[in-house]
Image 1 (cartoon, rainbow, N blue to C red):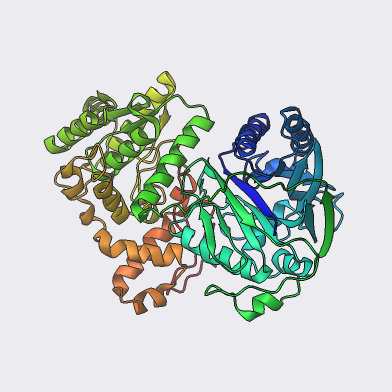
Image 2: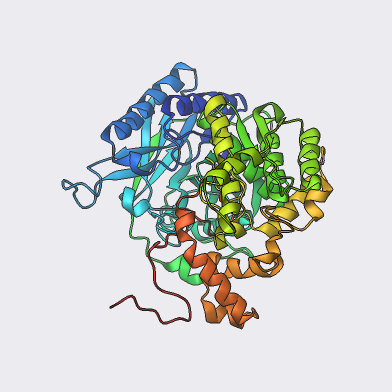
Length: 597
């Protein structure tokens, strides 16, 4: 039984930085070769970054990807790595995009995987299953492949697959069983959601059993606009046993020795394990042809044994914090912002955003500005100063009352208009400092506030990125308490324990306008994340009047959310790419409406 030493490169790529991504492949391929690997696999669309969205429609971009692949193959050989089989994702094309008037059925843009060897592109594979849900729009961009590529590497048959191919039953994994492969390599750009690692493990085990073959699942890390990728790469045996697994949110090379059957092209027998898939998944017609590529490579025995090990899982709060810090760091660094700036109110939201920013970027790249008004309490000003001292960020104080008074001296405003004016003056100050000094403004509203519209357009919602956009208020408190158990304890205890308030009028509290967040957040989660209707929310035990009020607030705030800054996705459904609703929308849950004359 041959022993294949496989390496999974859990690395970060940048959309559009094709030369930089290729350099990353060369650097980590060298590490894989130095570790004695016979094959190294990189994530989905490693060369181009992911997701590339409408860049796929540009012929120049697609050609740059294809040329970079050929150049990379030659460069790896020139680096002395020609004997290492390198699997890498890229974008390919065998025709115009589907939106073109010249498009032909069965051809188009391709989400592709290639195996590079001895200076050549030895084999290619086109992704078969294309996701078109949640944050994915791949039916818009790509044409599905209909052929499974099986590479004979020495005495081992290896099938190439891409991401969604493992998430759906049938197709490539059923074809892999029929083709009798010993290993299925699945390269991924699988975005993070809380507890998705548990889902992935069950899924990879199921597909390994379905294929009757070992599965090597490699995923990228890093942030790309609203998405963040957590890695969690793994290797599972044909019997569904977890053999090796990386950590989350870590750059690392997982190297593991796999004993695989000698290639004979006879169909595999599905494995057996507690994670066995339902019978229907093992009998779905894959409807794919199989193409075989033979590579004249020797799978020689290594003097040592390599066990990749199984990394321990991390707690939910650490998962989320890691996602938020990585998402912010990559957004700032990949867009070449030197630093960030935010308003420090002394409240919980700005305190948590400041702590995330300092953890992500370091205190020297974070500016916090206290913007007190005539209604700001002394304890809030003290809490903002305390947080600045704890974190070491660049702290400034800019009172806003003289500017507010200048407006009021020239305009007759009262009530809510005056409250919103204060928020907008703060936004103007932060944007002015951004323009003057080059900082990226961070906005600090949480998912609960965004849901019900509890924000001021062009005021506290101003900014280029929002780390808490997908974090409910109750989770904000939970994260603050967790972070204070770690070194540094950056968040003042008073910011955590005091009742939340915008402090835009005397004695104001959030509870004056909103239900307690412990009651509000489950309703938001049901309506936004799970698409439950009014009757289902009431059946879950929520007060009917509160449900009606909350749903109305969520519905009428769509125009605000459409203008909000991007922020890191951590849930199953985030505002933005995940949830697309019309702004002009007369439908209301439980209410008959008509705008007809």
